[in-house]
Image (tube, rainbow over all chains, first blue to last red):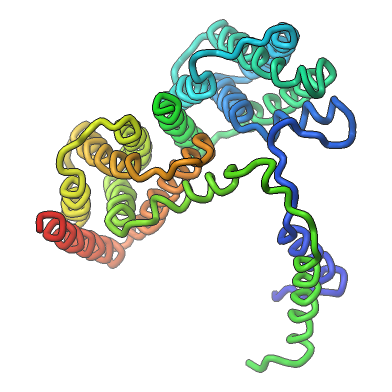
Length: 201
Length: 204
């Protein structure tokens, strides 16, 4: 049966297309949402692929391992991130090696290979990722959103890991789990390329 | 089928409103994050820039579809990983002899595999695809434009490569029908023929 668009549908479509086509501000770093530091922190995480992609890769990996591992990651990652962030707020040193590239590479490879890591192994992974990226985030947020920004990041991490890992846990068809592993291989391949960029300088 | 005036209005009205909204002046603070979006788009576009690359990557998907599981997903996983390795070699200035010849051979051999519906051992198929992926990656690595966002460029680059494999797999699904099987072998023959052409061009 053909769909007959009514006036409301047409207006909605026009609005959506118009909004999508409108040029908008590009502000991926030091995000200022205008809604306060907590939202700035959330915006920072969601618009920074260096942080966002490893987090999603960890969530996918935890989901592949099972619901219990997903729950551990969901709680441990935000706490470790906060701890690292609080430390990062007090330091100025930047790492000599490309942390995001290494995170991409390791987590992507783990997802792609569907490595049978124990629950404790997943927990350690979540804590290490949280601490390392938390320190880097803290250093960035010191001049902006500060500690409240970290709280926003923490909340966003909790929701992201919960949603992504629960999604993977719910996958039943074998091909869907394979699709997750393919996505992991893309993350690892991006990490490898990023490493090359970093070494080239 | 007649296209009534009412139907024309139903399309014209949203189109005009959308264009009006899109044309509204709005400051684009692109200087804040210069090169970020461009980096992703350039990365996304780069694997499509050469027909030799495109055909070889589609051939990987076609061959995977012919071979079935687990090659169906293992080959498209191997290719981006090894291609990235080749790109890193290119980025770091490490030389690789006969890059263009390797790329042409990849189209020729992978197309040949599809054409002949060759079914080697899984390890052999993975090695073959991985070996040629290094040449593709090296060529891309040496051509990467300066001043781009490395991460976003890399992500766009890898996603586009994966999409090309996905396209190959999607086309390759016709393998389940006898006529589709024949068409797939025809597509393999076409890719192999193009590979021969690229090889001749690379050697002259």
